[in-house]
Length: 203
Length: 333
Picture (cartoon, each protein chain N blue to C red):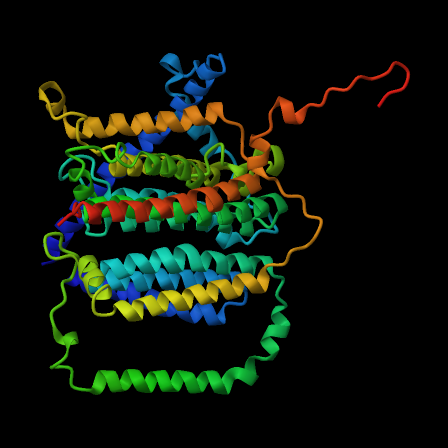
């Protein structure tokens, strides 16, 4: 139990601190790296809650794929940090408002009576092998009760994907492309042409 | 109370050491084996001076590298520069926590073992990207960009291959994946997936013919051009440890883990850990064999293979497998 609380405080404090560093770091690449640290710690918290599938999905999707592309873009773009910082005060009221709303919501959540809802149930401290796995539970509920919502999510993602492809796809002329199938089907009869060359004339 | 915590802590540390130390030693012998096999392929003698048959060559090399001066380029981003090899090394060792070497021989027998392995191997790209960016130099940066694109593209097909295996098992636990292969190893019914997984593993561990992130002929040494001494050793160890990790993953998913090939008398008395090791060594030999045989891919060919060949094919195979399992009512539980 002591180990459990120790790991909880470790994960949560690192998550909060690295989230702070995301917005305060001077270098955007450092910001992204702190964001990744924050994601990893959040997934550690999920593991402590017994939601191991969610934790792994968080790492695979956000850290393993989304953040890689994020880092890619931030590294490639030459961002002018001084100019970026000029607009800071302009957005401050809006950001502060959002933050206050979030704090109030969290406060309401903490102050309300939670004796009747699921949060009060004892959650297992670590994944146990022999019980019904929550991966299975998620699958069972996702593909039965929430089937249509799940499919709609998929369609929204598909639309977004097609949209981004059509926005970025430009067919510039004059690009040489390798057609591997046509290269593979080449044989002596199509590749070589026999010619009789007259002496002293050339082709 | 505190006494109990101390004992549990000590047990955990002992378990970790019991896995990590053999892995590190086997990395040393893998490097030796690679040099020796490549030498035999190319009709050379390979390392033969240090120790009998040159067997201590890797240890001598490690000592030599560690005692050299560690150079940190003045224009580099120092913290990230030092962190990058450490992250590579840690991630390549972290995956071993869930690998079952024999029935019950596993540090942490978690429900989502295969997802954990997938997550850890997908994090491996960070060490490379960070190294390339922090070096503040052109060749490492190009290597890092290539690596990021390469690892993300091959992860997709690895994900589909894993899904196909999971459809046949009905669990994400690695021990259960092995036990599901008691009748037949998945390499036989899912042979195309096995081949795709092996090739993707080559790409994921940046091995030849897909070692474009560290392509000597165009990028000097790729992402670790600026690294020297101990930080270079960490990259080197990390790369080979993740190679062994990917081979173990291949063995668990497709070659029946610790199970003997046939459950008959002389074969099934051999301890499971020996079968496991033999299979891992076989896959590692394939890694080296491929390195000695094939020329390096061009970058656009690599991307084409990942996105235009492996991705559609593995997606089709996922659909085909699930259709087959549902139609013949063979879905597990």
